[in-house]
Image 1 (cartoon, rainbow, N blue to C red):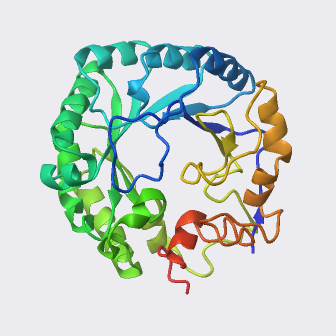
Image 2 (image 1 turned 135 degrees about the vertical axis):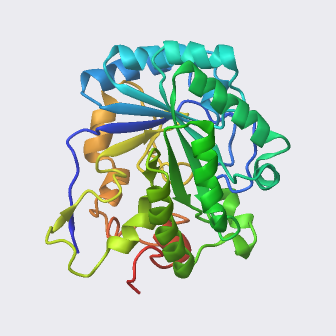
Image 3 (image 1 turned 180 degrees about the vertical axis):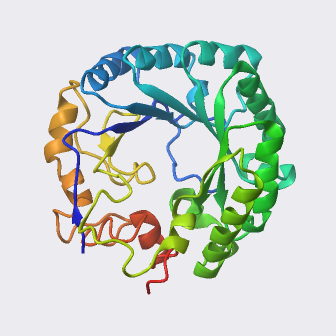
Length: 333
């Protein structure tokens, strides 16, 4: 088992600047869509993270664009030399909003779709969400933004991969990001046909490599899918790992200003105390029981999704490993 390493302070922060969302996707891992911190709570934390040398902040939700002060938040982040990235469904973005955000320094985006086929996307995200998202994507591209289209691959849509690449190229985005469906949150309620299998994941990995060569202009983030085809028992002599980064290089600030390690488990695995002063972040990162769990320093602990942290960061995504009761992305049993 590899030793888990952790940075003295996180390099990357993901921040649920709101859990409010205009959509209700059927596989969302959130169930509470109400919370959002106030702007005057956000600013001193941004300033502190900038002073501590954080490289970048990803603004997530909920739907970040639902915040009227999003441009001001982005401007504050970039004023410290930190990179900002906005994860959005793009349905609330029009030409004016796109230029407002890009002018504030918000040039990097991740826009989520469920399928390159409008009807399939809308069945999960709601009526006309595909058309509205495409409109928002085009507005952002025209404003000079760099966008990665993000698709969650399931047992239902994974054979649409070629069309996903084609859509990304047609829209003129920077790249494509491919995530695995993990049955947590409301996603547990979906039919078993949405679940992935190891054979599906291998097929996906091979297809990603093939389509990447066909679309060399796209930056492709294949994640765990692509990593699996490079894995062999003796692939690395390193006896240490940062794992996926959860609790080792990155942290999550929740909408109630509690802190988490994994952005998929924020409703079940968060600090008991919220940030009262920005300096609390350092104390939480260094000593809170939550981060000890994610560094393999707390034997026997668990959450509703994670059966054990004893082997955390040893099998890729620990949430997927527990939700599927196996590692889908390697040949290990």
